[in-house]
Amino acid sequence: MALRLCCKECLQTNAAIKFFRQAQLQIATFSFSKFAHVLDIHATTTVAAFSGCNLSEIQPALRGHILEDVGRTIYQRHYPNSHITDPVPGYRCDGVRRSQKQAEFDWMCDKIRVQCKSGQISLDRLTQKWRCRFAAIKPHTFDQLFLVLYTPKKLDFICYNGRSGLVSDGSRTASQGYKLSYIVPASIKCPRLAKSWILERMQQQSCTIIDSLCTSSHLVVQKVNAAMCTKKHQLESTAFAHHPVGDIHPARRGLIIQAIVQQIDESYHNIATFSASGRSPFDWCRDGLRIECKHTRIAWCSFKRSWVCRFSGVKMDRFDILYLALDAPVGIHVLKFRGAKYLNRTGVCEESIGKAIQIYGPRNETSWSVALADIMNKLTKSGSEHIATVKW
Image (cartoon, rainbow, N blue to C red; front, side):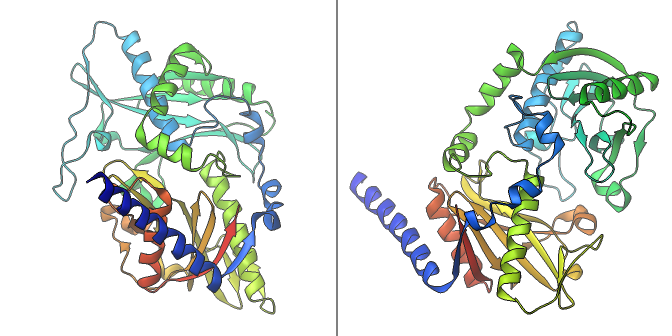
């Protein structure tokens, strides 16, 4: 049995190597050094402000879970005589039972439903104003809102009064909820003073600041270390250990990858006329064609026990050409998307956030290279065209 398993793994690995060798013969291959200048273009003041913070090197989704975990501990300390329990997940609108992480609120305090939201202070590139935003707030799903304000050296914990400051998020509000935004006056340039302004504004809204912690405190470090022990984090961190933009915030990484894909598009169409999209719902224009670039990183899905690639926010009526940039440990694979086999609906959120292109690798296959070959093979067989690879 062990021999058969070993042979199977060898065959799968060899198939992955064969796939990428054949792909390299058919498509253009670029070195990342050709595009290294785009790293400086999208450097931000926010990145500089958080440099050295132990939480800044953690991807936002995982950091959000860590801050929620820290927040729950602080909340429990503040209400020592209350009974804190996990939420009852309930059911989705389609009748499917929610997982524990999909519950509409984060914990119960006696009979009170508590929702925890974290927000990071950042400098807006256009207005040059410091700001903090707490998103996806749905007042009907909780009784109390608990906020964690993340700044370069501190975490502040606030009980929100739930009566003022919530603003609509446009057409997304019905499915995604409201947002709570704090925009600091442009005259305040220091992030520490910006945080003080935000906390003062919260107190004016009758919010209660119950505690604060250094980001390097024992509790935060303990929660970070616990999060690092999960299979998902270990597989992904090992895979992307030598990735040149591995620790960059996904939003900034998306801008970098988009700039790379646009340069590849320009190299293929060097006599075409290119123009920026401005505020249009696509990324750039080539000879009147609306072009959109979506990027994602191959990630481990614990629920499916497989690697997955998911491209979100796909609104097919808003562009003419869709490029998919698949961020992998060895480079970026660029495809021109065709076909609709893996274009999935997103339920009640679809009208505001669009559809998703989601492809899973083989179940129980922990090798990212084998999974990536399988995912790329599925995309190309369904009609998409693999047009370029950027090697790290």
